[in-house]
Length: 429
Image 1 (cartoon, helix red, strand yellow):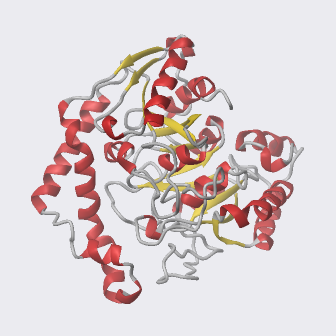
Image 2 (spheres, rainbow, N blue to C red):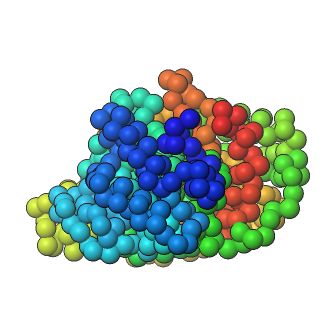
């Protein structure tokens, strides 16, 4: 096995015991990138000389942090001190902010090797699409907006990468590319230094190739409760199988994946029960759209005024309130979100997790359609932690995943649940 093939958790163990160096792992990842990048196009910026220099610095460090020696990709709307942050926008091409975003500072401080910037949909919001292709079929999208991060981890270029989610930008690419992804509770990862779209929704998360990889990053960010074990085996879990308010628009393969995951868990002795969400949840998808577009008006006003000609029409329309969002509609959406958050949290500890679709179906053909966030946006608005788990393949042989969801600040317990259920849901792992 080449070092690039190791999961982050497996590589971390070898890095700690000295049988692998950060430089050797980084060099192996760079070799994999050289092989696959012409096809997958996951990166907007990569400097092999800089990456190896960063790795050598880590190898010389006296202390070994939680992420010691692990190559890490950074979505190109998150600032890095030693690399440009372009946001996939002509306005900011080549921009160097000269400082790390808060999440990058944590990763670097815990010994990660910041390897490169991964391509993204413009401003992680709309406009230009990433050049990235799905590693399983270059004719298909890897999803968005965390296009490059999801594809790079799935294709073995990196063991870990940052993504963000405002609608479905992290969990949906995990499903499309067949890797693991975590959207933590909103706000537990400081978003300073990442492009702001919606302060109510923007959430920084990460990709890995196993649940243990996701936990490593969670430990680096000191998520609440990681020192408190779940304290129950697989057969004592209670999982709510939730089709959700948008089940009727799910493709056949997504419906099949959810039911298959439920069947696998049931066969393994897990108590799986159908979960019908209360009536207010019928309107939560629309509430997320209203908040997204309402808050997004101000997010791009500066570029609208200073660089109007370079700003994609998509963002001009948002500043001009093309959707006709009213103050009353926003207030109602905020109120509904608050009501639904309390209702959802009330399902726990009666349940250990909720199992629900991760995407509408397989990855669409082409780059322009990055997929529908309809099976993610409500969870983003609820501020709850979500973990994407590969499950099966669709009619075109493309990955189709599911996700498990927990209550706000239930990240640690959800990671423990993921470690138990992932081998059942994802037997290929």
